[in-house]
Length: 114
Length: 110
Image (tube, rainbow over all chains, first blue to last red; front, top):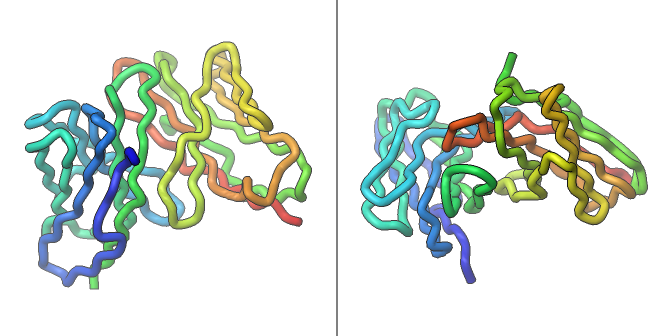
């Protein structure tokens, strides 16, 4: 059953702690993305990766880091430098980055900073 | 002008109604357009791509007007299960990234 998985579904973090969100896909997609969604807001792009061992900053990369060591995996670390980390984090993948390549989303992780 | 702008909503309609959502985009070189649906506290899911000639999928019709930089989604014979937030999504010309509108919330009432 092909798809994108994210874990955990809910995550609570104390201020000053780094936390890593997992994203795995078995769709054999080359491109992967991380978005953040705040209430009443559109999705904002944090980082994206078009191929293994390469990634680019999105619109709001400050306070976040990523790695792409394997095609299937694109973990996101929310660092203590991120001032307002409480949000709904969505991972997506697509077979390419241009044209009609739509993005497919994982179920998301809700991060709350206590 | 925002890159992608949608009707703010919310829309509240009775079952069986026809409802239309509008969306405008600022980059005239944009090449790809999509409508996604997002249920409350869930991930967005692709509803349909939008083609230049317009396209239909059952009760859903999407249209693109490149001259006016305008996209629309028409839902006929609304069902309770159509209640969701509808996201207009655009790929600006030459970009690997998608730009998402804030979404329009639809509630279909019995």
